[in-house]
Each structure stands twice: as structure tokens, then as C-alpha cells.
Image (cartoon, rainbow, N blue to C red; front, side):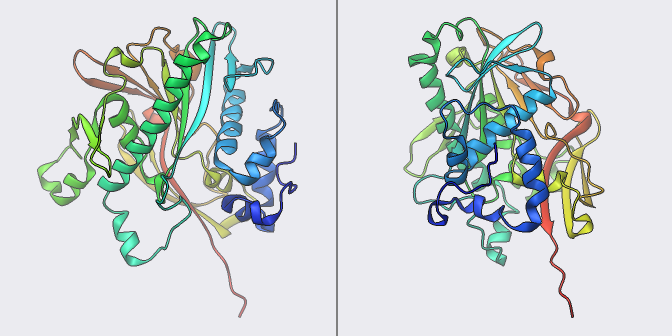
Length: 348
């Protein structure tokens, strides 16, 4: 499949799709087409949706590449949910979804890059609150879909059911890493703003808080801790990544040398201490799985086996409901954040 041969006129093309058609992104387009190799377009509309709505199709193709990297097999004979996946020992179901901007709110690409906006990105409370709200909507919609529909399908019954949620809900969504999703699923929120205000009071880093709920714009409250009780025992785990964006392809491409600059934050030790890096894309080393996160539900009726995603670059989180602790595996090589800058050189 060639995702970049236009199937709709320019007026209907998504903002992100238009951006990746420039000649300088040819290497990135080749990588993406290689990710999609073997993907079966069961309803014959994947490419058109990629060109018109972009993010959901991108996320599905990205997940497919992850499954290939993990040497997992997708059974394309099953029409729904999105992926019926198997290893030699296990089978599980994955339904993909995205968190999108609310009506009337800025789209992910609506960035002004002025001083006022950049200042807002140094404070995380509002970014995280909006992310939690939109992630909640995506989660709850698919949970309802499972209970009303998917759970009645024979090949789904008795197997781990996993939601794969990607955040595209606002400008600078890529800054959130795991703060909103951990709060939503485990009711544990890392308050970076409190730390930035008074770092001397927190020698061990930003404190973790139990928010219990977040408030929507209309005053309605969204309870937190979806995986802190058995309300969602039918959801085995959540796959999540805030780094699975087109920037990953820019970072992985090597055609343009130092004209592409990659800033990134990684953890290289089991305690998860962040380390900043700044490289050209030829020096930067990133794979598809880097930045992927798995959140396991301790109350799951059909738990997702740890070994399925036990690969360098993937962080798996487990919550202990008795003591309220989160244990994370894979922090010795974890991508937290990445931004890509293309340098344009003027000829004088």
C-alpha cells in the first residue's frame, strides 16, 4: 500500500498529511510504508482515512509495527475488534483509539510559538487536566463498546482485552509522558508544578498526589483510578504512548544528517532519573517500540501476560491496590520525551 498517493483533493486532506508530503520527508514516508507492509485493509478505507483524519490510522499502523517487532502475529480474518494478536503461547485482543481535541478547543497543530504560549508549556496542570479528560472519554467509550458488543464475539471471549490509546487531544500533548494516564488509571498524579514552585521542599523530585477526581469545564467531576478497583475488570491493560507521532519517523530517518535535530529525554537506570540529550538524527538512536507504555489492571478477569511486551524500550506498570504502589519495569531504557527540529539553512 502507498499511503501517500493522494486519494482525496487537497481541500479534504488533513493538516498533518499535507505537512508530510514535502520532498524533505521522503525518507520518513518510506519508513512508514515499511511499517504498513503486511497490514490488511479489511474495509478498504484505511488510506483515505489516513489522508483525511490521519491520527487514528497512523496509530493503528504504528501498533502493527510494534507487533511485528515483538514477533507477534495478527489474525486478519477477524473483522473486529482492530487486532487479534497471538504469540506461540498466548492470544489477546487489542482495540485502538485516540484521544482527540474537544469541540471548540485548539487542535494539536494549533501552536503559536509565542512567548505566552511557550510559558504555558512550563506549567503542566492544565495540559494534564485536559489530557485526563480526553483520555477518559476515549477509555469509557471503548469500555462501553466492549460490554455491549465485543464481549459477545466468540473469538474475543476469555482472552485479554487491551485498549491502545494514543493522545492527540491538544497542542503540546507530547509533553505529558505518563502523568495523565497514571492519574486516570491508578489515581496517582505526579505534581510537577508544586515541585517547580518550591524545589527545595522536594529533594526526591515532584510529589505524587491522590486527586480522586478532575473537574471538567462544566464543573462535572471525572473519578480517577479506573484500575484501582474492579469496575473495569474486563479491560486487561492499556497500551499508551505520547511519543508515537510522526516525529518518531523524523527521528528514525537518517537522510538529512544534522539538518534534523532531535532533543530527547531518556531514563537509563531502573530508578527512572531523566537525562536530556540533543543529537542530529544520524546520532539519535530510536526504534518504534521506544516510548511505549503498558498499564496492567490488577483486577483484570483475563490478565495480559508480562512476557508479551517484555522488550527493551517498553515500560510496563503494575499497581498494587493493597499498598497503593506502582512498580515500573523497563525504566533502564525508557524514552520520556522527544522533539524534532528541522533546520533550514539560507544561502547567502
